[in-house]
Image 1 (spheres, rainbow, N blue to C red):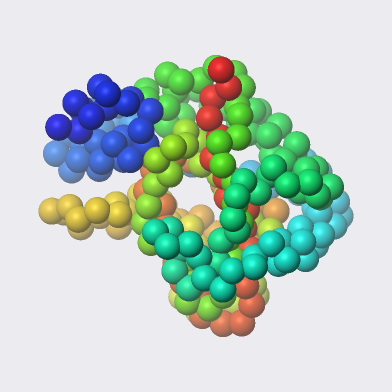
Image 2 (tube, helix red, strand yellow):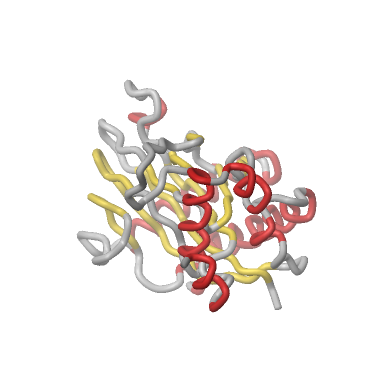
Length: 239
């Protein structure tokens, strides 16, 4: 059934997520052939490319500006974030010098990554590469204590990305092993086998994490003072 749906729209990431999940359970060999053996993600710390002083300045400006953009008390209905807020519209369409500077840096990092990692994400992902990217959507998420995301995918994306603007000390000095972390691989649908996240990524200011948009992802709640501020976005292959 899922493969018939993909025949109608091979780029629908939710259908791909369902196929990836099913094959992981019933046909691991085919899963490795079509998708991956180890969960596909890449971590890029921007301090390595722009310098720590420039990165600190950029994130400080962004955090103040983003707080003004979070004008809602709750996230929109139907979104994956619980006990947090999400900005409206396409964030990177807005004009703010620090934001525009960040996008230029992120775009170059993503292009460099894609050019140097053949085979990343499996045949459905790799087969769409064109050598360039274009922005599909972008937004900011802000969560405080106990705020988190349930497992989900980005159905209209291709490569999903999260950039950490600020991370509270409660996460850096966490009590739980993965408090506040990004979790990758646990399905957001009911399956007969129990599947836990295949990988966890520690959030750090200035850190970019990228992964295929069909990959289930979530965030673990944290306990303590402070807020975690991120910019999330999806890119598509350029025409």
